[in-house]
Length: 236
Ligand SMILES: NC(=O)c1ccc[n+]([C@@H]2O[C@H](COP(=O)([O-])OP(=O)(O)OC[C@H]3O[C@@H](n4cnc5c(N)ncnc54)[C@H](OP(=O)(O)O)[C@@H]3O)[C@@H](O)[C@H]2O)c1
Image (cartoon, rainbow, N blue to C red):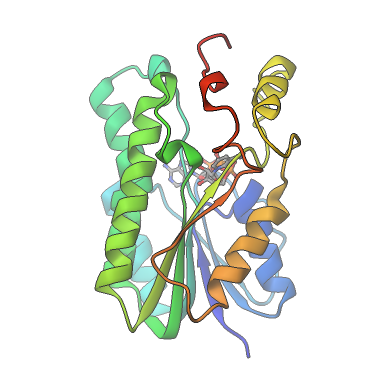
């Protein structure tokens, strides 16, 4: 049966792959994007632009989604990943991360026209549970997303199942050099880039498993339980 998927940050990278997977399954996909959308046009695809760091823009997006009717699956994937030392202004840096990671899904969920038996998945990070002094604000805001999501699992129980995925190194960013990539992969039990499909599979499992809610699922190649003492970014 055709379902409606709403995915944030679906203009490129993982979000785009999740949207393409949903379309290939015959679902209707509402793809939120920020700066640009690399998805090819499709009859079942609706693309909506919003800056999730701006609450007014999020509210407009929430109204647009609401007008499109019931949502079966919501994936909050959008994310910003800025090291603290690149922040011009600490307040702006905090606001941007907490708005994109936590306030945006909170505003969206409040206005969401849930279909019966709906499911939500929040994409967090294994660094929600591991401090990282270079990315302290990113880590804190992903931890907040995770905790907020589990509260939503309680609040929406019986109506929406809510789960969290903690990816490990699924796809490096272009700015990550070879030394960084090798260091990160050497700290995993499965020492290669896991690829977007690992998260697509995990989302599919969580969305189609009626007994699963309030779960935090690591999809990290064993990075969390690898030798934690080596997991420092100080030397990178
Ligand atoms: N890649 C990895 O190895 C890895 C590891 C751990 C966790 N994760 C998590 O997995 C998810 C997907 O990873 P990814 O690497 O594909 O993410 P990404 O490319 O860093 O970001 C995902 C999307 O978020 C959007 N975004 C950023 N700022 C925004 C804003 N202010 N308003 C609206 N959208 C905004 C980006 O759009 P624009 O580019 O247009 O700004 C982008 O399309 C993220 O939640 C990430 O934290 C990824």
